[in-house]
Structure formats: structure tokens, C-alpha cells
Image (tube, rainbow over the protein chains, first blue to last red):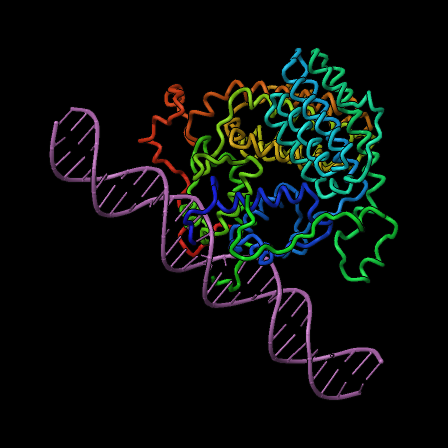
Length: 263
Length: 263
DNA sequence: TGCCGGAATTTGTTATCACAAATCACACAA
DNA sequence: TTGTGTGATTTGTGATAACAAATTCCGGCA
């Protein structure tokens, strides 16, 4: 392989493919149920099947993807029950993390959280839902980190990954929180003032609101293909779901070979 | 590769190697800090490096192994803090699982649990500590399953994997529970009678007792090679495996090539 | 028109090979 | 005796090729 002068490459290819795919998953680039093909991905990313295989295996291990027929892997299709279970665990565990993060007053941490939250709100107002979701994720990940509990943080990340494919579907949803009483603000206050109980409660409330919104949209998210598949498939699926058709998500054109699509 | 008439092989090699290695990890076949070498494992298991690489990548993703110097993987060395965190999460999450498992009376489930528990006690009395630990694991995994919460069960499994390397070190420990009031018995009663609160409490107590025992042994476990924990050698406590001269141990004899060591 | 069978293609699997980086060993010099 | 430099070996990485199983395609026959 011509490694000459390649762009920055800190890690090996397998890890890079893994990170790329993981991000794609979180960004809902793939639709639930979609099968991922080894050679297609390899071609698109400009690498051989070997590192792609490694990346897929890792994602299957983390349940970001699932083994399908002993042969191929696909994006999991989440039932409402499964979805509720994951979000209920998120509420429990992120609540616990928030509690730890707010055990004592931390003004600087609160400031960092507020900056992220402000960017999130701004993105929402500017109709950049994709950015809004990204900032929201950043907010929750920072909270997990602030807990100081490494293992807990990893578990939370894993839970996010597992409902990643549904994330993007919320892009068009205007989260309806009372403007001046967004749960994030209560969380931030908890962190600033060292009010662990408040932080925990607010975090759980935030996730619960999110849960209801997501469950409401679940059927549409599971049924809708992102980009014009065969007409039959579209007709077969549950109609309605206005946003999905327009969701510009996942137009993934194969990159011209030779231009590795890896960050 | 001569696939001819090989023993039952439901899955691909990568998965088989993964399962094998995972089991080895749970059985403390490797000592904390030990580096795993690709070609050695491949030779020992009678496969090429490719599937071994895939298996290692998966285990790293699950934190059953850790990336070492951007190049090699090793068995994680758990600090006391990390150990406490994992076990505290186990208490929380397995407690939650027990609660769910005991939401309503389930005599048959209780019976299955009791059978496992009896075997565990018997193995303990018969001085078969290895079997005792295996039955204990079975008990906890069954409880996780009985909760009906798939995602929760997976997380619990992951936590067990992460302290797997320390498991075996407890083999020689006589768990001191009041004979007739072992926490498992309370858990079983909770499941039989549908007493969720009892099941949860007892589960947490079980894990907490275990925690103390494990923490007490932690320094020795981290320092000592797996076999023959001679008091003198263990006392050294230097992680740099001073007895490296004697550590030529490598108890695992390479299988004769051609005899794949995969189940 | 509809169904069946086999050929061609797709697609996952895994061993092998070539390469590069790291490590080890040994010899030589200070 | 100790430190260093150089060559040899180890070890991870990743493309490629060979193979097998599954799927798709097509043509022929009923």
C-alpha cells in the first residue's frame, strides 16, 4: 500500500474505518435494517476488505450493528420495547453520572456545559438540526465525563450508539421544552451549585421527554428508507412520515477511488 | 484450510477465536498486564493471524483487553478504584435485574437457580474452586436473563468480562457467608415469592461481600502469575513481573499444529 | 404465462505474502 | 564495565488471492 505522504494517520486502518462507521451510525447515515456490504464499504473508503471486516466485527460486538443471517451484518431494527429499555437505562445511568458530576460545586464545568447548550439552542433556532443534535450529544458526553467514572461513561456511550440509527430522525423535531426551563439549564445549575439531586432529576427528565418524542416517531423511522429505493418498498412501508422523504440524510455517493474517505 | 469433517463449526473462525479468548479471559488464563501476541495465538489455535486479529479487536472494543502502545494489546491491569467502580455498577445493575426478575412469583425459575446454587456449594465443598466460580457465574447470568431486559443483560456480561482476569484469583478464597443464609438463597426466595425488593437487596449484598474479598486480594492478583501463587513471589508486588525468569511459565502449552483448539 | 434448473455473479471468509516498525542481540569502543 | 550502533528477528498491518456459499439471472419447458 502506498503510504507515502498520506494525510495524517495516527492509528491503523481498522480503527479509522471503525471510527468513521461509528460516526456514520450516530449520524443516522444508515437506515434501520440496512445490510452493510463488505466490498462496497471497502471500495467507498478506499481500503481493502480486511480492515472493514475488523471494524464491522467491533461494531457488532458493541451492538451498534447486528449479525443477520450468520453471514451479513445489518443496522439493528429497534422495537419499541427495546427502545424503551435503552432509554430507561440511559435515564438511570446518566442520572447517576449527573449525580456524581454535581457532587460538589463546579463553576468552570458549568460554564463549559452552558457554552455547549447555547450552541445547541442557536443551532436549533438557525434550523441546523444536525448541528443541534451533535451539540446535544456533546452535552451528554461531557456530563458522562464529568462524573469521573470511566466505565460508566463507556456504558453510556454504548447506549447512545445503540439508538444512533434513530437519532437523525429527530433532526426535524422541535424539542418542546419551556424555553427558559430547559432541563439542561437545571442540570447546569446542579453542576454549578453542587446540587447532585437536582442534576440527577433534571437529567432524567431530559431523557424522559426525549424518550416520548422518539417513541412517537419510531414507526416512521423504522419504516422509512432515507433515499428513494424501489417504489415497491416505499409503498409497502408505513406512509405518512413526512420528514423522512425530505431528510437529506445519507445520500452517500461512493467517493472516487483513491480518495480515502477516512478522517 | 482443510475444513473436512472438522468438529461442529456453526460460526466463522473469527467468532470462534473470539469466544475461546473470551472464555480464557473469564477463566483468568492470562494474567493482568500480559501482552497477547498475534502469531502466538494463531499458532496455538491453529488458524491464521487474520481471524485472531478480528477477535482481539472485538475484545478491545468490549474492554476485555486494552490497546497498549498503539501496537499491541494486553490484559488490563485494574486499579482498586477501577475495580470498585465496576463492582459498584454491577451491584446497581444486577440489583436492578434481580428486581425485574422477581416482579412476580416464579417457582420454576427459582428451582433452576437453586439447582445452580447447590452445584456451586457442592463444588466448593469438594474443593473444586474453578467449578464453583463457573456455577456462580451461571447463577448471575441466569438472573440477568430472567430480568427479561436484553440490553441490561449485555451490560452486565460486559462488566463481568472486565473483571474476568481477576476472577480466577478468588478460586482459593473460601467465601465466608453464613452457611444457611447465603445471599443467593435470599435471591432465590425473592424470585420464588415475587419479592422484588428482597431480591434486589440480597443481590447487592452478595456483590458487596464479593467486592470486599476481591479488593483485599487485588494487589496479589495484579502482581502474581496465574499458576502457583507462592506467597513469597506474590509478596514482591512489583508489577514489572520480576519473577520473569520463572515466568517462562507460560502454562498454556501450544497445541500440536493441526489440532485446532477451538471448541 | 408461469415455473424450474443451472450458470454467472455477488459476497463473505481466511490463508498468504509483502512491508514497516519495533525490539533484540551482539559486538565494538570509550 | 558500560554505552552505543547496527544488523537480525520479531510482530503488527493490510492488500490480495483462492475458495465457498448464497443470490441473481436467464433460458427453456410446460
